[in-house]
Structures are given as structure tokens and as C-alpha cells.
Amino acid sequence: MPTIHLVSAAPGDTVLGRELADPDCPEYPGLLERPDVAAWLDALGYGPDNPDELVYLLTDDGPGTIPPGFAHLSLTL
Image 1 (cartoon, helix red, strand yellow):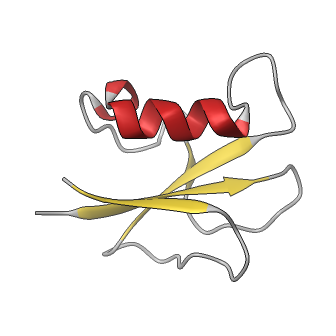
Image 2 (spheres, rainbow, N blue to C red):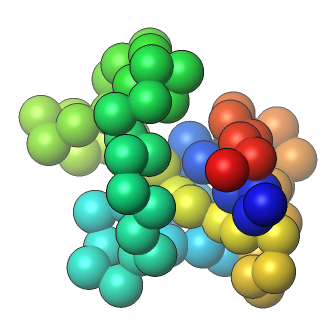
């Protein structure tokens, strides 16, 4: 079962992952509809009306790690 991490960031932050809105971001069907994920994104204010809130997706087999101090949500799918 893969583990993924959603990491909250602001424009200009360095996070080695793919922003959720990036067309090259890996897709995990149903991820954004999960109640825990939807609640976390809502709490951050993430959405098209808030360009100052970015959320990156990282995987355990990818090149990035969660930067210290960044809010994140880790999920085992």
C-alpha cells in the first residue's frame, strides 16, 4: 500500500513534489473526496480562489521529503 503526503506550502516555498493542480501530478482516484483530505484542504483554505495556498503531493518513492515545519497530511492508500 503506497503512502502519500500532502504538504501545505506558499508560493516561493521549495517542496520536492507535484502541486495538486499540476497536470503532471500523479492521480489517486477519490483522494480529494476522502472526508479526511477534504476537511484538511478546507481548513487550509486550499482552492482556486486562494492562489497563496499550494498543496504538494509527495510519495515515499519520490525524490522529496516533507520540509521541517510544513503542515502535512500523510495517508496510506
